[in-house]
View 1: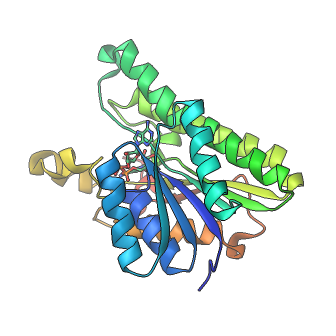
View 2: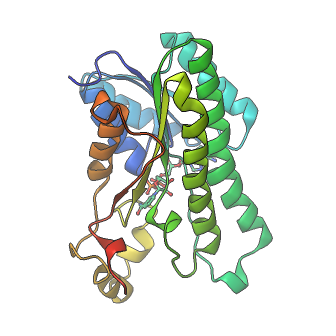
Length: 252
Ligand SMILES: NC(=O)c1ccc[n+]([C@@H]2O[C@H](COP(=O)([O-])OP(=O)(O)OC[C@H]3O[C@@H](n4cnc5c(N)ncnc54)[C@H](O)[C@@H]3O)[C@@H](O)[C@H]2O)c1
């Protein structure tokens, strides 16, 4: 077991990439706290992990709200006394052409994806520093933080922001023993990408942009997260790791 007794907080941990990461980390011996906004889904995922022998708690909370974020962190500390790893994963993506993005949608993406990553990252980093211990923070970015995709200007901007936030956090937290890295997944099969998957006329040409010719699955991002969470990546910080079936290496 590569994460025996390590305490992990995973935001957006009840579905998709967050859930796969929670399942994987629990199987590696970690104590896993999953958070999100949907109580029934959180409870079901926690029950699934517990049924597989994992140690897990769930906490409902909105990453945009500082009071919720503090409650999440306090709940983990109340249960297990510490936090070793944060997977800052909660996020949304609601496509719209640049000319049609509503101000409210721009604000919503910024508040959940970018501000949420900041709030949770700061709260957990403060706790790690107070306890004088090392830790690993993994921010869930995207290939959309490294190259622009049409109809995603607001989402692209949040993920580009997460990459620079990751480097900035890494710079200031490295002397304190905390590593901060970002994961940049390509197209992964989750409910976020289901609308495109369910539209064969649009999905077939999209797949041609991926040299490996297929979408990724959440477990493939969980594997990369495991690398970043453990001492296997102990000399790595401020890095944005692309896991995309080769999508970014093509000109078009
Ligand atoms: N699926 C992909 O192709 C892909 C690619 C690159 C990056 N990502 C990123 O991966 C992360 C997870 O996405 P996913 O694909 O697993 O989709 P998902 O919808 O299954 O997961 C998103 C999670 O975030 C939670 N969440 C949303 N808003 C929240 C809020 N305000 N407070 C707390 N939790 C909130 C949701 O409840 C959900 O559990 C996101 O940050 C997404 O941008 C996904």
